[in-house]
Amino acid sequence: MQNKKPTLWRRKIGIKIRQAESADIDAIYRIEQEQFLKPWKKDYFTAELSHDLSFFYAAQDVESGDILGYMICWIIEETMETHNIAVKGEHKRQGIGSRLMDFMLAKAAEEGVQEIFLEVRKTNIEAAGFYEKYDFKRIGCRERYYSDPVDDALVYALYLRHPKSTT
Image 1 (cartoon, rainbow, N blue to C red):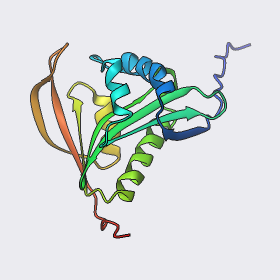
Image 2: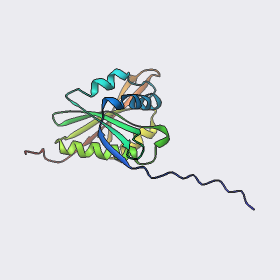
Image 3: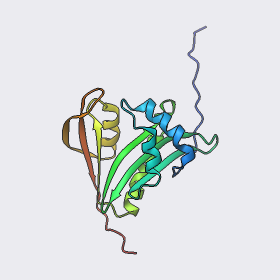
Image 4: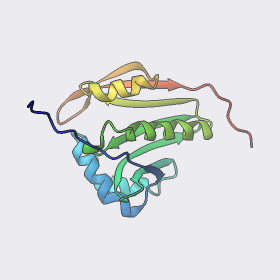
């Protein structure tokens, strides 16, 4: 009889993307600490909740209510700056990041955004590949942009072609 590896089963996660709330900050902060070498301070997330330019959304498991990811971007006129997109470690590669990105792109279209910019650590090949999958193009490099550890930032842009809504 052959030894078979056990089959790992993961339930398909139902995700709801909604505006982040103050009750989400602790869970979002834990994801931030887990996913980034130099995480934002908790106060920064609280400030984003009331910042006029900020679009701050959480990806919530509809069954458990757990926060599994989040995104923060700013819209200034026809430009979107993506600050953070992150997914809880054990829930990566389950489509949550893609759902957040799709939501962000839909929000950009809704708001009449013409261009989206973001930075990613040069050593974060996984994130760079994720953005390139969405047709973001590398347009520059900011040397020594990140600290702890020092790393360059690759600058990416996505140029959208849709007219701004006049309604």
